[in-house]
Length: 320
Length: 320
Image (cartoon, rainbow over all chains, first blue to last red; front, side, top):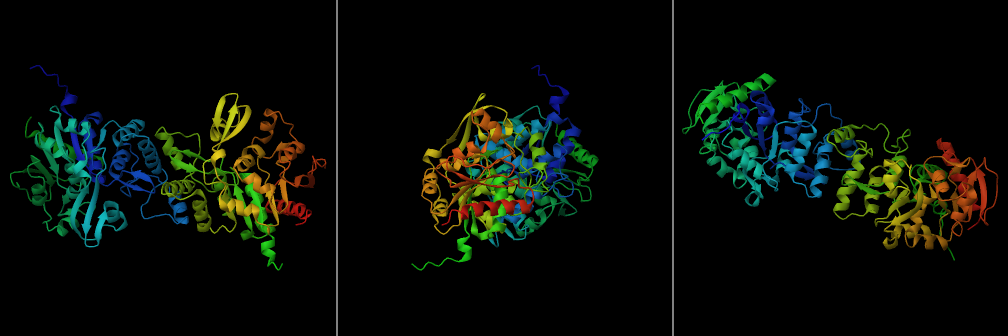
């Protein structure tokens, strides 16, 4: 049993992530271990076709964040963006409820063209990462179409209708992932989860219901996590009893769930070994899920690295 | 025989046109008669699909010119344009030989989307004109695909490969209009040419071989012109023995043609009643085609109106 495991190989980390919050964790992770040691499995349930263009919001947030092109004020899109396309679109009576920056259009136009010629979302994403010198691996959860839909008090809404057009105002009754039953996880996603040499699998502090659940809904992914050889740690998205960004707390209330870490832990029960929670919270163990605490609010790069290291330390405590 | 013909109806003018030079004439024509009295039949032989987007350069030049959005320096695209899309495209390794401005993208993206849903180029063009308050009618020569191709000393080139990518450098042996044999002129185009109440049909000083010939290659258009009830006048594109813009003179030489008005007149022989030529040129009548002279260089708005009026006066001399 001689197994060659370099330090670098031993530090491989797999992150399940949505957009902005998860991207910050991935950013921290590449300093906590090494850029090429990080694989991000990304939610594509928010993906949609708008103006004929294929848009993958969470993947793009990862790309912009890891290429140091992200807009720190908006939390989405590119820094130093211009908006002349939107102005012209509006003047022509085009749909302007979803803002597309001028530079941002390049990703959507190239992706749409390449996929029209048969390329997979995975290969196009890899092309983008290569072009921008992004060392971590960005893996769409599936190359098949999975669309998050929300049953609300105003009827069935697609994710972007709910999230952007309606600014999360409708009350959510339930959430569905259209296409998930027939979608396939990519081989790269399943291989990343099954890698026995990884140090940890980390569920980012993304919205469990809107960003992580779509990933878990893809057949094979939950099963692969259940038999994974490495520790699995989730980071709770709640800070001070609220979501840092987005509708997590509002959504939890509407779904009849108590807005606390216990609910998050219960949501991931059977899947994770431990959960990292914010240090302002009372410590606790929920349904057999051990917790550790750190300040989980990620503002500076140091914050991101600290949270990443805390998640890894928690994973390490479960040995390998 | 009581026929109601208002002054406005009597001043209806039909212009056959390519891009920049023709657009200037159309701009002059709307002041010479009235905006709503002008119909422009526009070359679509330059149209192509780039990055998955349907681009109609000559139609767009008409739209920008008539909406007062044209870039006076470049001679194409929008004024006050930004280029962040191109920079992002280049950073991703995308094809950057054809410049697409950020605002300009709105036309291409909306057109591509609407046509993918079954709209015709004519209806999309009309939508754009309506949105921007353009009173003249902009009529694509056909809703079917006609592609100008050039047989050159470097092989067969598509129009944009020749015109933009290769900057008109290859020597042209012959020109073909792919798809023209099976294309149909739109009913609106044929009705405009057949309108017995029009004052004149004017062939703009566009490149006869690359901008006007594609229009004439569409089955039915040449035949309709041959039996048109109104005078047909061409404006020679040559000023001082050269083309004002573009490769007309270089092209004529390569095709073995003398670069003079007689060649232009001969090219349109059987089709036009008269030709307007630049006032620096010696006057003449070519193969039975009467000429009149004015300064045909259109720089100011006054120039454009003067050239339009000179073309109309020449047409008027043929009575109705």
